[in-house]
Structures are given as structure tokens and as C-alpha cells.
Amino acid sequence: MNKSLIKIGLLIVTTTLIGIGTVIANSSSRVLATPAEAKMHLDEGIKALQGGDTNGAMTHVKAAESALSG
Image (cartoon, rainbow, N blue to C red; front, side, top):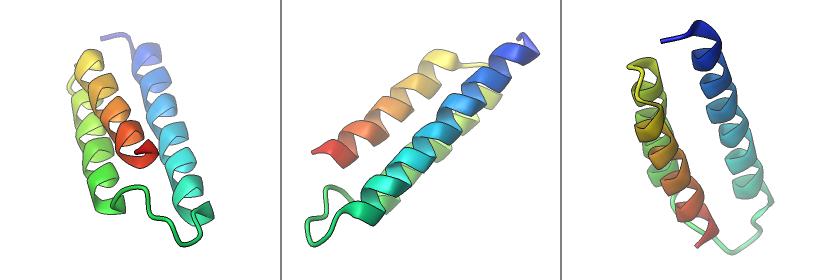
């Protein structure tokens, strides 16, 4: 797999992690989802991306985003 594609994918996952952290930090008394569930999906997304599975990585990123958005 092209190294620049991997870097772009890792940038997307990292940006998503930062965004999810912001959502969790800014949610006052209302918890949208468990941080552990979102983290699990992001961890799996990183593994998929490192293995060259960009579709699998995006599936996990979307699942993490969905878990936090309710």
C-alpha cells in the first residue's frame, strides 16, 4: 500500500480521535455513548488501516462516530 495513503488514513483516524475527545469533554451531564465503545472502534480502525484495509478502517471510524452521536 502506498505510504502516503497510510499517512492520510492515520491523519483521519487521529483527527477523529481528537474530535471524539472533544465531544466527550464538552458533554456536560449527557453521555452520548461509552468512551470505551468508541475507543474500541478507533483501535480496530487503526489496526485495519495498518493492515491495509482502508474500507474496514472507515467502517470502524464511522461506527465510533455513530456511537458518540447517538
